[in-house]
Length: 628
Ligand code: ATP
Ligand code: MG
Image 1: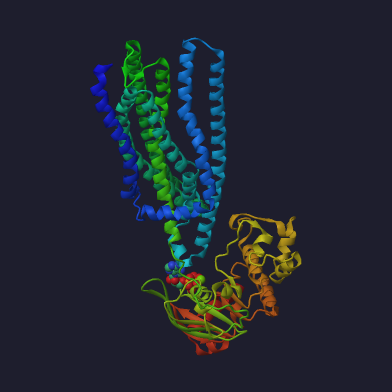
Image 2: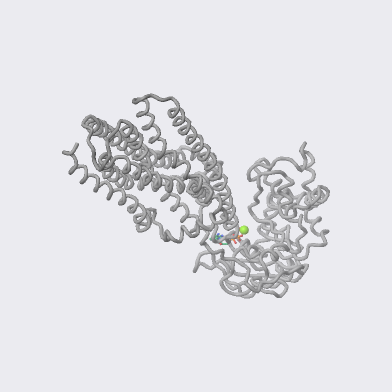
């Protein structure tokens, strides 16, 4: 065996360096390179932000670290016991010590299994807690974003953040980090054990390390690309799905199924091929490492066998058959963690990339927030004033230009004007869904920016143009804000808006199931339910944007009648295209391209014979023609 020493020493030294290199390589490269996911956040920042979530559970992690030592002990001690048994069996066979050794082996194995089990349970529980806290925080944060900010982020992207990305982080806490630490300890532990047992064979094992390192570095390069593709593909497909499933009925109506299917197919194919690429990279890496393992076993058998036959003694160590058996077991236990280190670092990268994406969402500062000196308002009279308001959704493209008007408490004001003239925009500004660029909006003489948003919105009953019902029941949709409402109160509200007649027809009444977006109701019924929801919390100011557009004229008149009877409602703002429905308004504001062109009562505006008059006559004549 002496003739191999120079070779073994050189190989061993290179191996040792490679071993140190691979650990340093991942740690440093990981930091330096922003892990190839176009990350801008520093690793330190990501880690410290992640640690905030892990901090409350530090005791759990400490406990896991402690019991992990037992499972590591098994990996290091068990080959020694097997080697010892092998020698015992060969020499003067004595049952006593042999049983003792087997018992110790079984004992360590059981302790190790129990520890691994406890470790998995503790980590899973902790990971789930961290995950749900992270998801909750993210959801609350997304809820706090303004309409403007939400318009800019596709829903599918947000869904991916809340589901896939948070999952990747939970994986990091439950699996990756612990295994990384465990594998490092196992590598070091086995290395020391091998060194104590037989120097030459340790050198021999080390000779294979540079090859594993080489494979690992190459593997990392390819797998990183594959990971990125899979991630991008997943986000892409989620975004596409969430938009197209919402619009699937339009797709069917317009016979666009084939085209949409082709688009989806392409995205699906992209994700599929990215996944295949990932599997391919892993598929090559694992057999290659296995090939190295087999080669090292063969070398062990040859060198070990030769050393055993020659009975060489080096540094006082004689090679026994037990040592060869122990080394045989050590080799696989030594190669496995090195191989998994590479995979785990990849998972870690992926988790970091997810963490960055999540923190990027967290970093979007909600635009519409309470001013530090914002006040609570208990009651609102309903005095609303717009003072030279300028507003644009897109910088430079003014949607409202120098709009000024004053609505007094208890007044009913109607906004009319052509499509896109800015009616809905005015209504959403009153509730501060968006902030204006210039001018001032005053409620009861107070600038709305000085009123707490929750306090402001509490007093408004806002019925939007596009009705949205949540999946649940009729009851859950009506009590959206006022959770303490009794059935009698809910039914009273429904009676007001004439929704009771169709609700009573359902076997389940208020518990009738509402499917996603209220698909199982007619457009008019959806509006009635939305109406009921709006007045359920007795708002001081009612905002109705085309609230009765889908409701038959008879029901519409009944609703109007009920609204007039509702004494708590002060000011009422209405947008309606049917001018006949707003004739009794105290003030009618006619908008055109974001500017107020006329205002006054119905009679005053008719007298002016301006735009309102023309509009009214057009509709009137149309109705006459229809009637005749
Ligand atoms: P309609 O009678 O059709 O409901 P409207 O008078 O209510 O029309 P608004 O919804 O206030 O019109 O829209 C006014 C203008 O603002 C339109 O030109 C529209 O293109 C633009 N707009 C509305 N919402 C947005 C948005 N979220 N982002 C960008 N532009 C918008
Ligand atoms: Mg509108």
